[in-house]
Image (tube, rainbow, N blue to C red):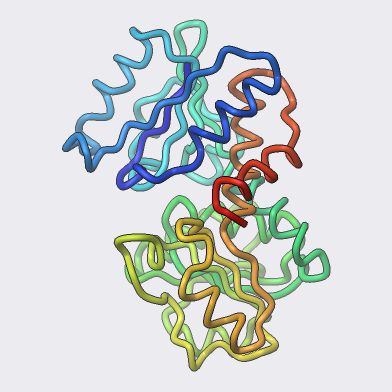
Length: 278
């Protein structure tokens, strides 16, 4: 018994992907979404929600925006990556303990390398310094990025994310940024790690005039699969990495943590394409 906790997740494809893969693996697997918006829940309700997950016999929960960092003080242990990132997207429940993991960074990294394997050492800008942005920055640096600049509308949050990443990868490879145009002028690619572009959050986190053809553009948003940023970037000649790959690959990692079994990543990707009509 698994679940997803987040805000505005009514259209999430994760439940369908996890249940379908469970059936293919011979498991009796149920996966339910708990939409904070639909139920009027806030971060203050997380302690009760986790308590009831234990009582109801849940084996794990995925956690998404805006709870990836709020859940940290409420769990019993963290994986090394989750501790480094200061964000959790997967909570495994067992033996009376809640253990937090992060499959966002590894999922995004695998998805990126599948599309742009030649760009792993590029200089990049990450727009958004929340849980997703920090995970993307970690993935970029772990796979060999020369430098990552982190930018956020909250300058302090960008500084905190950069400091966190620098502890693992060095001050020379990561820095906060305040001027998007200046940061992009020195970069090979940009990643949107904000909710901007998803349903209910229309817009573009990067102005169209800054999307030059030699810049690769990636998005973590996958609903809609082709965000305005992805669409405009492609039209301007940029190589693009839509958010669907990360959605699949983080689910692959979570499935393995929840069940102890290795899922078929290609089968899950094919199911995702069916669900999105792609």
